[in-house]
Length: 315
Ligand SMILES: Cc1cc2nc3c(=O)[nH]c(=O)nc-3n(C[C@H](O)[C@H](O)[C@H](O)COP(=O)(O)O)c2cc1C
Image 1 (tube, helix red, strand yellow):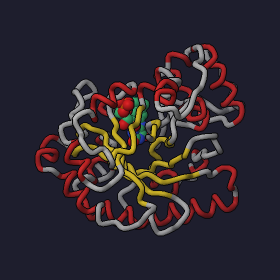
Image 2 (cartoon, rainbow, N blue to C red):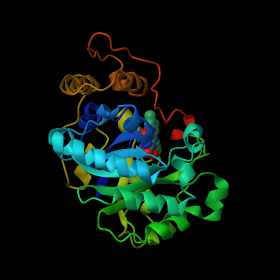
Image 3 (cartoon, rainbow, N blue to C red):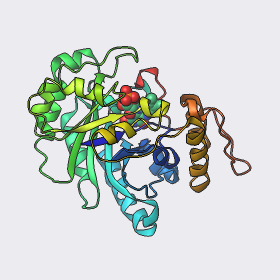
Image 4 (cartoon, helix red, strand yellow):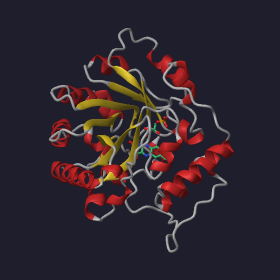
């Protein structure tokens, strides 16, 4: 059973990912290729080793040429600085609901463009060092869900015959659902019929939630595991109990103070950009009292130029 810590833009820095105990797989936030390739923001890629975690870089793009450039750059950077690039895989984000992103044909706007997505995935697969995966929603909007666009996409992805194409993550909402709209798992049985390893995401806070979602699926062989995001913001120990139930890992639980202190220590090792601290303080109750020293001159800015997940619908 795989336990994935969700990609969270301006939150999922190395210091945060390391803080969360027990996930098998973790992700950077979505990195806009347009931004990180052109504007020398590459340094945000902080894939230093974390024991027990396979680390993924998540990317947002709608161009094969950018995907090609990205892979070339990643291979080059990794060769020059292997310590910084413990990259297990690259995940293409076709789930971001922000209108700024879908408006330029990226994120959830790509769900209906099955050939484009397959072609980008194939571009990312033209190397042998990294796994490749795709994170998607059920569709851009209700209409696309009714049209079954996700199935047309899965039909296309199913044709990719490459062992490095390792999984899909499905966030069980469409991109125009609100954060309070309930998750819709009614398409899960059909998605599960595709022979593509699947990570289930959306509204899962513990192992019982996951069990409830998969209860009526007779053959679960394609279900690799599940992903949690907001549960980990609230409590970075949220995977511990699950690891214990599964007999995979056993970590002692920490107090909020211990969690905050450990995060401060992680930041002393690899300091994220200031905006990460700002967002973590905003979303995480254990981070309210933390104190992080920044080099003189570095400001905590209100926004982030490449910010993709600025919409409330992101959850
Ligand atoms: C603060 C925040 C930032 C997010 N940023 C990203 C992102 O960069 N890439 C992504 O694929 N999803 C992003 N998401 C969505 C999560 O990965 C996840 O799909 C969503 O929160 C549903 O899972 P949950 O119910 O376990 O939180 C973000 C969510 C939050 C709360």
